[in-house]
Image 1 (cartoon, rainbow over the protein chains, first blue to last red):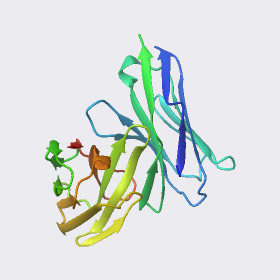
Image 2: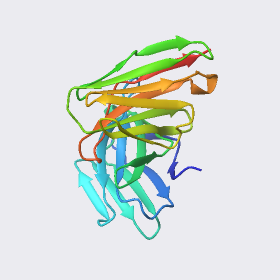
Image 3: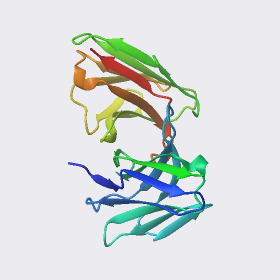
Length: 111
Length: 111
C-alpha cells in the first residue's frame, strides 16, 4: 500500500510557466514532508520541506502548499526553467525514522 | 554528494549469490539509510541505522540484512540475490533525522 500518492507521473511545462506536483497521504501521524529533486544518474537532493504546523513555505521559486485537513501537499515551481527538468519526489515521515516516498514526477521544461 | 561514497557503483551477479554493498560517509552523521529505487515505486526504505550496531527494518526489508560496526560504514547484504532485487540502491545519511543526503547510488543487476 502506497503511503504517499503522487501525481502526475509526468509533466511538461513551457519555460516561464508554473509547475505543480501534488501528493496525498493517509497517516495523520506524519510530521515532516520533504520534496526531493533528482537528476539522471544522481541521488535525490533535498529541495524544500515543511511541517504540518504551517500551510505554506517558500524558498526562491519553490513553494510547498500544505492542507492538513485534506491530507494533501503540493510543490509549486514558479517561472520554471529548463534546468528544473528532473524527477521530483515527495515524502513523508514520522519522527524521522521511516520515510515514505511518492512514486515520482518527471518534469520537462520546454525552452 | 555530501561526503558519501557507495561501492561498487555497478554490479552484475547471478541468482543465489551473496552480494554486499557498502556505504561510506565522512560527515560523522548518526543516521544512515538504505533505499532501493524502482520505476513506479519511487524510493523505498530497506533498513536504517541510528547508531553503531543499532539498526531497524524499513518498508521492504525481506531478503536484506545490514550491519554498522563503525559510524562511517553501513553495509547492505543480499544473502542470496534474486532477480526481484535488481534495482538501484541508494544510501543516505542524516544528522537530524530530517535532511537526508543521498549517495550516488549502486546499480545492481541480478541475472
